[in-house]
Structure formats: C-alpha cells, structure tokens
Length: 123
Length: 172
Image 1 (tube, chains in turn red, purple):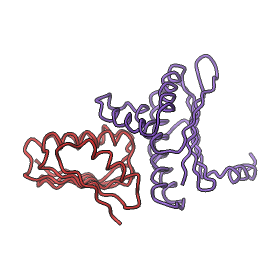
Image 2 (cartoon, rainbow over the protein chains, first blue to last red; image 1 turned 30 degrees about the vertical axis):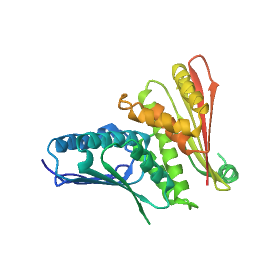
Image 3 (cartoon, each protein chain N blue to C red; image 1 turned 180 degrees about the vertical axis):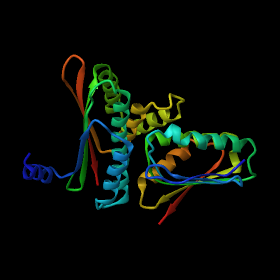
Image 4 (cartoon, rainbow over the protein chains, first blue to last red; image 1 turned 120 degrees about the vertical axis):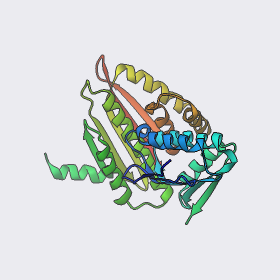
C-alpha cells in the first residue's frame, strides 16, 4: 500500500494518510461534490483497515465543513470504529474559541462506540 | 442605471454583498466565501463560522438545484446583510411546482421542531445510508441547527413555477 497525499484547495482539506497509521485531515471541506472528493480517501481507508498498523491515529483539524462532508466524516468514523475499534484514536482538533466546531466534535463523539475520540482545543 | 441610487440602497440595507445569476459555480462560491472570511471583522469566531457554514449550505443548495434543472431558466439571488451585529442571508430562486411541495414539507417539518429535535433528526439523516447526493434534506437541518431564525416563502408565479425565498437570521 502507498501513502495517500492530497493537497488542500480553497474548498477541500489536505489529506495526509501514511501506511504507518498516522492519518491527518486538515483545512476546510465544502467541495462541489463531496462524494467524488472523498471516494479515493474512503477506498484507501478500506484497503488500510484490511491490514492495519497496531495503532492508528487520525488527527482532524477542520475550520468549517458543509453537511455533505459531515455525512462522509460520519461514514469514515463509523468505518474506523467498526474495523479498528480500540486500536484507533481520533483527535478532533479545534480553535478554543470556535464553539461550532467544538459542538460538531461532541456530536460525532456521541455516536462512537469503541475507538478513542478526543476533543483537543487549540488556543 | 443610477449607481448612486444603488449605493444608497446598499448602505441603508447594510448589504455585505449580493450575487444574482444563473450559474452558481464552485469558483463563485469559493470567491464569496473568501469575501465573507476576509472582508468582515467579526466579534467572535463562533459567529464567523456560523455565517460561513450557513452561507455555504444556502449557496450549494442553489448550485445543486440549478445543476439538476438545466432545462429551465432558473436564476438565483443571494444577499448577505449586516446590521447591529445581526447577519441575514436571503436567497431567492424559481422552482418547479413539484419541488415546491417537497421543499415545503421539509421546511414546515423543521419549523415544528425544537432545537434539540432538529439536532436529533440531523443525526438520524446523517447516519442513514441514503443516496450520496441527497442534499436538500440534510442541508436545511444544518442551517436550522445553527441559525437564530429561518423563514421561508413560496410565491406562485404561474401553473408551473414558484418563487422560493429563504431568509436566515444569525445573531452575534
């Protein structure tokens, strides 16, 4: 498997997925067709979870995102939760003054069952 | 066209910007998001994020509708205003009769729910394995979750079309 790197654009986040289990999504997410944008990302994750690292850490730092992206993020968390469980940790990183993104993180956390979902404020 | 008259209206209404046209491309939306992000001075980051997210939802709903209805001339208008630290996003576009019924159902349903119920319904829709680009449904719930007030109106134009107006209020 190869690492996956997608450069950030005005409306889509930087994707930096390494086969050693360190994953990162950073920026903004409101592409015209989020299904199309995230398709290769989800494909990569499905492949990765078939033969994952002992530990997987996903750092997510999004300034804002649209509802389609929200749906896809949910699918990603669900996939990791079900296939990796406790061997996976998600860090939801947000600006300490951004109640909207903080709330979004809390929202996602409510539906997580097995993996560790951490809310990390940044000042 | 008298530009100073337009200037007067813009200043009195507190218009931040408005855009009108038949093509809501992603680059246009990117540009407008840029304006909102950088030209305005916000009292807090939460307000700024609310405004950006709601604006994106409204603009992309229009984008999606125009894309799926290339068979008729559907021009859309979005206006963002600011007065006394209260932002309003107003959008207007022409829609087909059958879409009016569907939209009205969703919006009336949202009107009847409490903030907490809206949040729960939003999570339900998000979880469900529906069609990948079922936009209008979850989009309106996203808006309703974040804004202070969401108002809408359908004005009958003729047998086939309605003018749909959405007005969203966001307080600082």
